[in-house]
Image 1: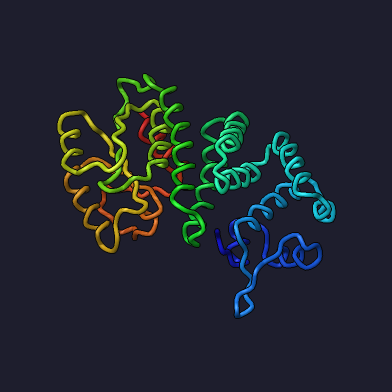
Image 2: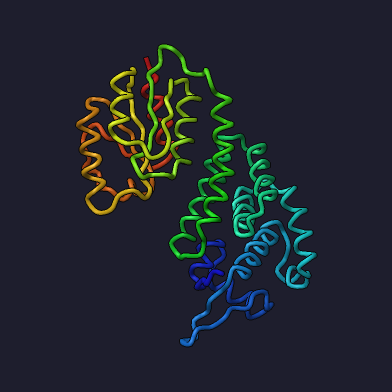
Length: 296
């Protein structure tokens, strides 16, 4: 069970702390526990209830009306509005609820609706990226367990591989070739998969090598195939100066090729990187790079 402070609840739900306090005091919608020092803490069930309240409130339900709903009535109203609503934030909240409950059917339904509504690429940037940012917050507060993280990663990964398969053969013979890989020990490949999708959609030839690739194996690939650009992502592999050392080795080994670098760990690095390493902060930035490369 999670134990959230009111500030953590604010970050995870998007509802301001003072609003949560008002709803708690005026309507009794949620009931926090209190520590020995009188600090409010909230459990998973309170987070789920607050997310449900947020969905209904965003879809026109007044708080006074929501407060009168039984749990069964609230579920019924949620099912109604989530089928009708096209709100990206609502999709994020529903994915979060499905993750907490390990509800595969609900997760698949919400994700499928988002993809149908926005298209695959926009569903990733407008729904999945904010969703995984929320998961990151839950990791930081220790309120998500590995089973929940693996649950959502495996379901989303399936969608990415299907989308990639749909673009097989899209690479144009005259276009440069990218190789996509993760450093040895790095397993978080969702961002890498999406970047590969973007490159392939824009007509580039791609080789996808995936998780935890030893540097020696990458050298063999580059030596034996025509590789123009490399793309990697760092989210959790290195500590301290290890990332700097790895990137310097990567830079010198594959110079003068450009190496694109993304991931939450990469964002923390200074901009003082080797000249052939380019740090990316967003998928949109990578798309702009692809457009520049593709120009004759």
